[in-house]
Amino acid sequence: METERLIIDPVRESDKEDYYTNISHDKKVLETFICRYAETPEEFDFSSYPGRKDLFAVRLKDTGRLIGILLYFDEKEDSCEIGYGIGSGFWNRGYATEAVARFLEYLFREKGMQTVYASFFTGNDASRRVMEKCGMSYSHFVEHELTYLDIPRDLTYYKITKDEGLRYITLRERPELMETAARWFHSKWGVPEEAYLECMRAYLKHETEYGWYLCLDGGQIVGGMGVIENDFHDRKDLTPNVCAVYTEEAWRGRGIAGRLLNLVVEDMRAKGISPLYLVTDHTGFYERYGWKFLCMVQGDGEPEMTRMYTI
Figure 1 (cartoon, rainbow, N blue to C red):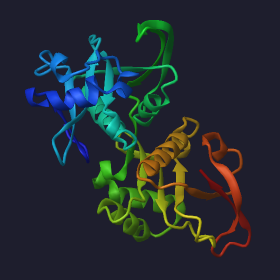
Figure 2 (figure 1 turned 45 degrees about the vertical axis):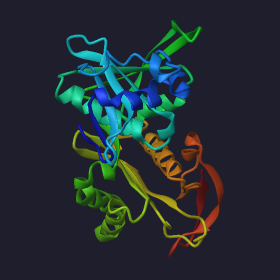
Figure 3 (figure 1 turned 90 degrees about the horizontal axis):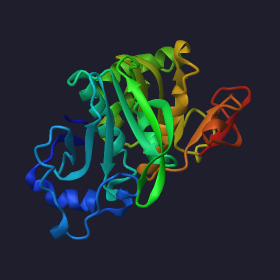
Figure 4 (figure 1 turned 180 degrees about the vertical axis):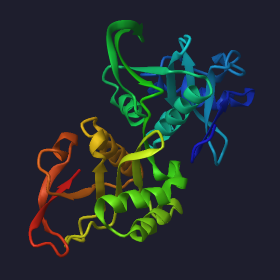
């Protein structure tokens, strides 16, 4: 399995050092990922990991080194639960979301799963956000399901079914959608397709980190937004701007825009890009997701001032 930046494949004998460093000896990881801690390489028992059919390495494409793991368990006829851990030295770069999204595709398409569950220690918002960005939604809560590190733990479960189909991605994960996405945004906002394509090409060529983000239902784009230098207003100092925020009417009320906004903010912050700005006529919506009103700005060619938000 591959993504834009990662390779997901079986754990090998040669992964012992990286597995020890990024999982079994990483106390930050083991605060929320259940695994036996190893103080030294000598006491780390790696023998049972290579060759397991339910355990996968998450590797960086450019180095081939293991930075995390994925696994599935509690397998039933058509459902299972997944777990994932990424070494703390690689946090806040979107690797977990990228890996889990691809892993879900594998479980649905190749393993024939109809429902996949995942759980997190209540309060672990980072893991919750990964699940939500991959289209998972709340399933149930279990109080004091287990004791870990001598602490009774509550578990919150999320799930996704094969038929749900909602996926939250960056355009770099599906570059073949560029022209389709440009047409879709043009149909919603009237901005020329070529203007979108110019921005998208620069993003896909890594000439800029200002990205484009989509919600897919199966193969259909049902929501999206982008990040550009300036969204047609006079405050050129307030940059970059989230732009072209849109959800298809039939899919509204399902939290799509909120999840996309969170994806944008986290992706930009992981790249050191903060704060972000956004112009809108709406009041009360963006506040739900942590955005705050900043000031009024003058839109290009617009007779009235419009609201500027920041996060």
